[in-house]
Image (tube, rainbow, N blue to C red):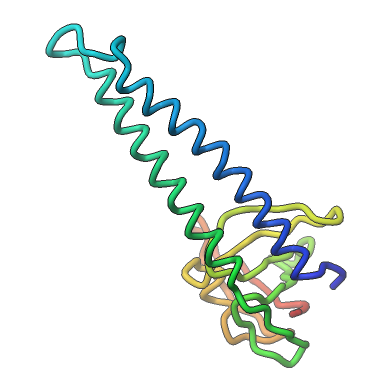
Length: 162
């Protein structure tokens, strides 16, 4: 498969840390702006400060989610799989979707929805609660399945599992 899963995890953790740090800075700035004297309402219809506080709360929640994902990824055991192994969390899977180009998916406990590029290869992170992740669990190389994505049935074939 070419991609070292331990190196991939380190790469994902670095990306998520960078995302978390940038978002934490933005959330702190939004929080400061929400409590600044210029954010005080000028009249009973002025909700700028309130809106900024809602935004800061949402950003802080996303920072906490990234923290949790970092923790879960840093302690994730890496399973050594071969073509006969059933897919579990930490599997790196190559899928053919509708007979198109092969795509790589990394089944992780948290951080799904992210895409990373390592050694020129794009890898999509999926969790066991996502439709693709749920469909992959327990399957093996050579298996296929169908999923409805955005109202369209798509055929997935598992080419390789590592």
